[in-house]
Length: 226
Image (tube, rainbow, N blue to C red; front, side):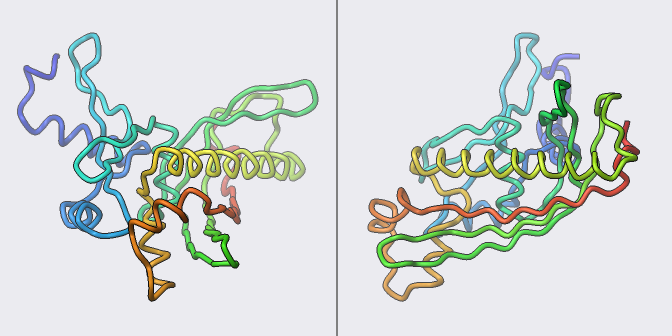
């Protein structure tokens, strides 16, 4: 059934379903207005697209800069952003695994987690630090990876943490290059400075901020999702 044959609640229900089962965070009206009008942060909303069959799909996340579109995040980037934002940490993503000559993919399903971020000024250089802990399970992994063995769990955990840290850093650099701040780094910096100026911060400080990720992944019931 095409979307035009459905009722007007369909887009909202589609977004809500994607939020519950996938990776795209949904702002409340209050949080959107706070991000839109507040200093040191940019708002984001689900990005919808009509496919070739005429159906509405949630493609990812649209990041706004003032009242204009600043950046579109795909599903994976939306998942990473959701974790960095830290309001609700859950979702799932595909990742690469390898052992010896064997290579394949699996699915990481994050059940819950926590994130604490801080910013520090070191002379002319600033650094934002994210301390992230996530709990989840691995699904759809290949037969050659026996997760009943402790060494395979440790191998998987190490590869996951390395990949996700690299992806987080890549996304943060993308935000800097596109001059958008959906993570509210400016607002965080303002809390640590009495002389914070939004225009000066985004012109001189934000593009040069370094990122540090301290990531810990706890895999519970590994092997149960196959």
